[in-house]
Length: 281
Image (cartoon, rainbow, N blue to C red; front, side):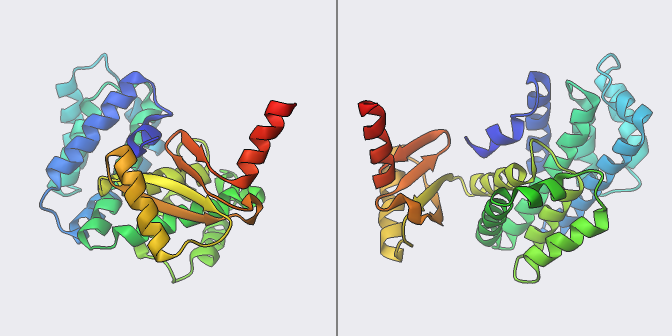
């Protein structure tokens, strides 16, 4: 699954279209923006989402498709124009002009676009590769610890306590953008869980580099040369650049298991034994 598909998976058709339009506007409004300016846009979009989450009447009014788009844009302008940068205001006006399936989807959409702005900021700073890798690894850590996933996703859990847990996981070894994205996701989860949210963000980072992600499981670590050969082979197969996310899984015994989107290539000994057992069963 591509990152766009992952982001849109929890939305109905109207909200999918609305989110895509808002994402496009982010790109248009910030085409020449610096990394610092993009971080400001991200913070402001998240703040607008916070406001709409608190103010139910305002949220419903701005997402009310029975009102004209011009009316909703005018209300948004009066609300934010003097409080945020022109780029942020442009994105907010575009968002409220869309026909969202539910008012809550408008809030979720603004948060998603805010996170994309942070990824674009990392890209402008030349740090996107590191952020992508850290998001992927953190997602795997969370997915492997169900108790940790439940704690971080629990809306009733102490927010400060969850942040402390996250700080211990990330410490100062990670990129500031990674820490900020993870903190935002824990504070305001979207989708079906923290681990999946982190995976979607990693995929979105990969898309920023116009690549697809291949998750590769192997019984031992692959050498640099093996990684390059595998990436080249997958690039030829899929006819687009492929980013490898590597996992070591001794249970495979030998061979590789490769997943690109929804497609799984199982060349492991364990996979072949399982297939043989099914045929003989």
